[in-house]
Amino acid sequence: MRRQLELFFTALGFFTRLPVPAWVGWAPERLAQAARYFPLVGWVVGGLVAAGYLLIAQVLPPSLAVVLSTALGIRLTGAFHEDGLADTCDGLGGGWDKAQALTIMKDSRLGSYGAIGLTLMLLAKAVALIELGGDADGDVALALLVAHPLSRLAATVVMHLLPYVRTDDSAKSRAVACPLGPVDLAVATGCGLAPLLLLAPLEALGALLAASAATLWLIRLFLRRLGGHTGDCLGATQQAAELACYLGILAAWNYT
Image (cartoon, rainbow, N blue to C red; front, top):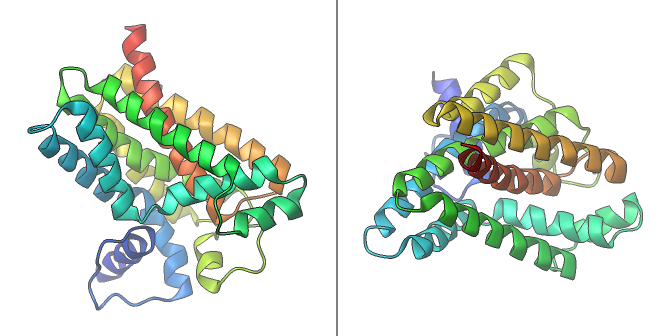
């Protein structure tokens, strides 16, 4: 049990800005195994963001509650995934070949493609959550509780299926990009899919299909343009799959 707690807190400390116990050490092999709990980190982030939304919605309009709770989520993760999305948009949008795309993605400056992609992503997520809200704040909370773990499972799947293409990154970055073992993959899958039980069957199906479609499209894109993935690609996958979850739930609503 202590070993599993160490792995979970290692994942929590790597993927968020949340404090972890001082007794949790770090080692490359531990970080590689901690990837099994990446979707479980989504439980924590999604739960805190959902709680923040519900609290803010008690005193402010739902639209502002969505914006402020989104800011809370970005603060909790240190814009880890949003930064990956922006870098991926810059690299794939401005790079003519693999080498140029990887070089651009390594640049810390924000380019036009990154700015546009990040702006549109944040706007789309905000509008989708506002539409999900309507007169029931609980619908937004449930969507957040589902989308955060499921989108992190999508990033874990990309990490597992595609090779890591950078050779000049730190040991920490390479360690977290290793493929998962069978047990690790099973744990990650369970943690990522379990929150779907919170939704009605058609909503859960819509979220799952939309997130899967976004993930498969990105896998094909990353293979064609880069021959694999980078850490930035994982952030882009998480953001795209999260938005896809919201859109899938909305599509299920419109269908019924």
